[in-house]
Image (cartoon, rainbow, N blue to C red; front, side, top):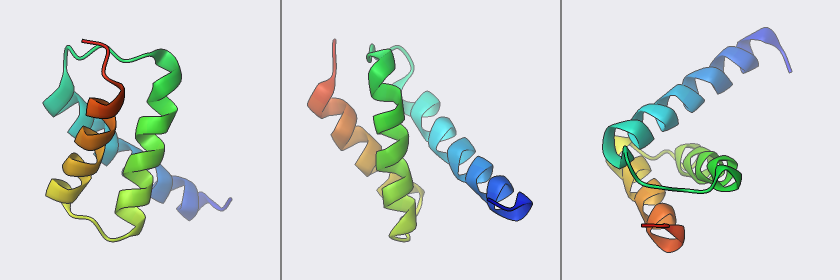
Length: 68
């Protein structure tokens, strides 16, 4: 992975992290599910999702495996 690819991947992860923490703070999820949340977010962004579509994808996944 080149330096520019690493930087792009970090930016994508920051967008996913920001969407998660802004909207799902306090929601209990298993530590093992966190990589799955990021995978769902990356897949949505790879399909050209905007912030609303990213949030919808993450929300749908979290609601399917939510602990509380």
